[in-house]
Image (cartoon, rainbow, N blue to C red; front, side, top):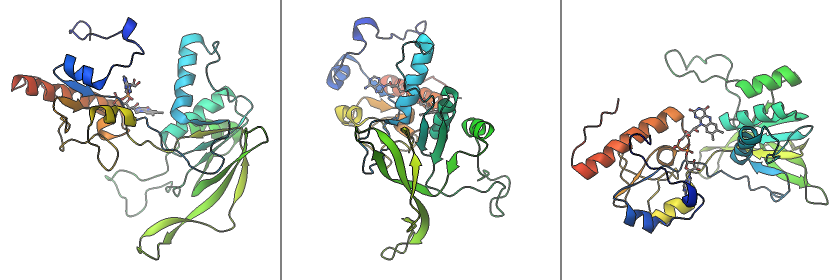
Length: 286
Ligand SMILES: Cc1cc2nc3c(=O)[nH]c(=O)nc-3n(C[C@H](O)[C@H](O)[C@H](O)COP(=O)(O)OP(=O)(O)OC[C@H]3O[C@@H](n4cnc5c(N)ncnc54)[C@H](O)[C@@H]3O)c2cc1C
């Protein structure tokens, strides 16, 4: 990328707070590509207990410590011998399951609020439709091999984080959920099943309950409009935001997605920027 003329601001610029206004003064166009790692929180009583982490913070610290020092710097959350509860049954939760197990966690439970998908395609989901079946990823496979059972429990949510006298997490109170008809709207909503409360031992909780777009401060600094899904808004298939000369691409534009989509969006945004500067573009996006 450097050979193609891209200048990476390093050295004295690293960690510096460069104001949005300054970037817009110094550059003809700005592309926002800050990802979508603003985590959805679980606001249950006891949330301030020590031992509760957001999944991406846990995973990032783990990878950095591993790559920088082979875990010698100790700048990660060690789950060895600990009881883990992971909130969220998606891909990020699965990465947490795998990482916690490889540290040597004592127990790992993954809580999912939705129902378990069927193991085989349902009759109303034939080929060539996308198969809506239960996916067992590498983290869960490792858990099954090690502990002898799937770490996931479904239709369950957290009611309370239980602390000890020192404020450290010691357990998680859960409750079962079921679909019920809302008497006011008539819509099906998840409701708690009375008497289904359970207490799970927990030294560490990892919250992997989804993402709410990019960090607010970036969008606010540039004044870019966001949509109802908390992503930065553009017209469909476009990259120009509501603010002149400011473009957006990747997860910040489409929400948490995949690397291949981020690459595609980067290319299309580059084309849109080129077009806005030149009046045309010869860049071909395949
Ligand atoms: C736990 C997890 C596992 C995943 N696993 C996969 C997988 O296996 N395969 C796959 O295809 N996708 C995976 N994804 C999704 C994939 O990581 C993203 O879709 C992709 O990285 C999006 O690229 P991006 O460039 O838009 O954003 P990011 O890769 O998130 O990059 C955004 C960058 O902007 C920086 N940044 C943010 N704010 C500022 C600021 N104010 N100033 C300067 N820099 C800033 C961030 O530090 C970050 O480096 C995973 C995501 C998560 C969370």
